Image 1 (cartoon, rainbow, N blue to C red):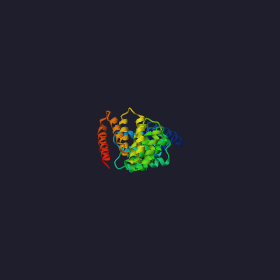
Image 2: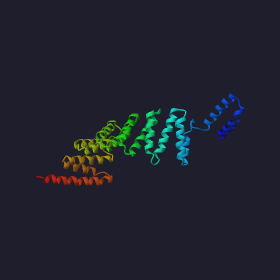
Image 3: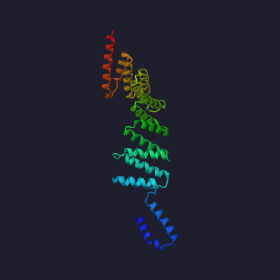
Image 4: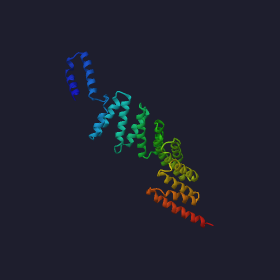
Length: 280
């Protein structure tokens, strides 16, 4: 506030000073204002957004973001202000559409920091999903996967989004990229591929994916899910004895969350085996 007081005093005396004095004094005051962090041109202007949010003043936070987006000194500072405005809006009721519009404009105009671009894309994809726009979200997740070194989580998110719109072919393709990439999520990706293939009625492929998941991590608790999936695929193929054998192996685990699924599958396999035997 001291800098603002000096500015008022300067303006009161303006008629009595020479043009050179005006020039140098004005420059000095601008420097003073920047130094104390007053005005949207200040390098620390966005800190005022956090302060406004801390005291619950969302209107002031958004106003500061808008000013910095218009008058910020650097491209990155202006981009950050626009992203911050979108982030604040995304948390407000009824502001999802406004958030999407703001982020699309930011990305269309071009983001000068690749890391900030990835953040903006992530927020846009998540907001689109929250609005049920899974197709658009899937494409944004794929875009993030191309931008970031660690693509696995974004490929998995894209796979889930494609699955929600019924595009299991694209969902399988994204999980295959994860599996081929050799990440720690190979077993998880293979499990997803098995589930997707089973849903398509491709039981032989489903069995192969579940078996690959088991090979990728035979000691992890996910191995029970792999064996359960193998049993379901074998059951669908009419190979009931092998299905029961896989269920017996799956029952040796310690995760009781899967016990019910194993029991239900065992009953179904046994019933189908009896029906098969009684059929002339």
